[in-house]
Length: 366
Image (cartoon, rainbow, N blue to C red; front, side):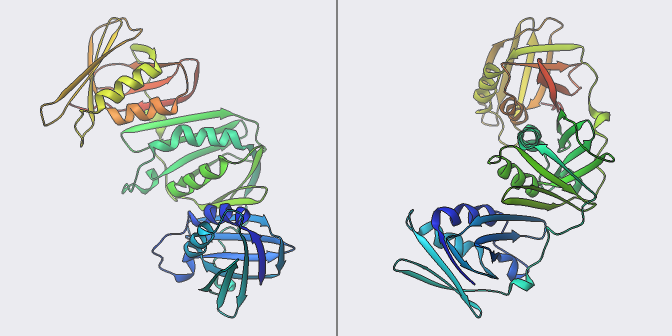
């Protein structure tokens, strides 16, 4: 195998696939990237056995073949070269040689035949969706996924697919994010997928650079998102996601409408003096006013008033200020609406002009 390729072509491809390579691997070959050359086309594949990323790029010249190079080392070599560099990669036996100008590197390689193929699976269903729609759903919800929770099914994003649209749901048990889009999908039967955190992050990263549609292939254990020249395959979490409909509060008795940026700024400033461990903020509601107050073990305090559209009984309620800031950060509307019932009930936050995304936050005792 022999390849001649520009740094500008190879570096982005190596960066994309190297994201899934873990520094500590149980199997040595998983620290490598698979390179396959055919018809002046180079295909790069990397996997950690949970997520697989594949990128295809055009090279200047090539001799067909396949091998695996150490992913991080090859990426670091490519990144260190000048912007206009041209690289030659050649394999002889178990050694791979990289040459560019006066720079020469010899790396150990492993046989391509030993590399696992995660992305090859028989799909139960396959359909196309706009990349922008899928990216919107993920961006609106992924922040609420749990991290290393013993309830493993919470460490991922629930995606519900039916013939009329898509819905994404994430929860860590203290908050919930839900977003849905209406869409005609050629699908024989509805399906539910729990996509693990790392797979969600890689899909989101890819979709940020894609225009038009992507093809989604689904099996019992995997989902594959592909477009021209690239594909991401991820294993699915095998588990039953909680019945999120049960925790969605009914319409609250109290309703607060406020300028989103003003509320975000107020929460951000008061959070500076919040307890670093519990991150609590106390909200006081009265006619036309929301007061946010925080304090910490050093006896420091912060307080800020925000003019809001609210009329009703006075209410005091506590929340994790980080959760509030996360919601204010993903919403893009001028105003936000907060629905509440009482000091012991969850709050629902959404854009009053677009309720396709809704956020539930449980109260805190402060």
